[in-house]
Amino acid sequence: MSPVLLWFLVGIAFFVVELALPGFIIFFFGLGAWCTALVVYFFDLSLSGQLMVFLAAALVTLFLLRSRLRGVFTGDSQQEDDSISVEPLATTGVVIEDILPPARGRVKYGGSYWQAEAKQPISAGTTVKIVEQKDLLVNVRPAEEEKN
Image (tube, rainbow, N blue to C red; front, side, top):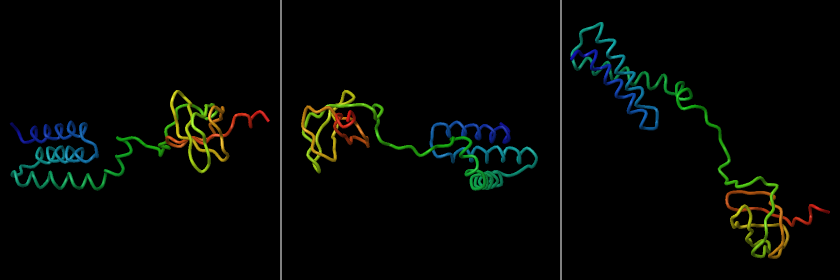
């Protein structure tokens, strides 16, 4: 088998492995293998020379191109709030365990039970409006306040 074809196939193998592994590093070893195939096509090199070309090409492409190409291949990501949100904040729930600040109580809303806190004491059975939700904690206020 010719060294050119061998290096070309090694490059394809690196590209396939990159699809399975995160990190976007193996890709540049594939580029290094293809650069080596190109050099071997034009120049007759010993195995040690081919390995040196491969290593040099892989490292140079890794350091020069990784930061530029990472956004192209991995896409842009935006920082998102990691809090859990079940329903829009304009919903109501029912207090099932008294909320006596600063202690938390429990509220049933969205088909689940949530830890809840409020600025004022709220007794069990009261309908409340969900003001804010952060992770598994909801901030509530009595729904009657909205009608006034």
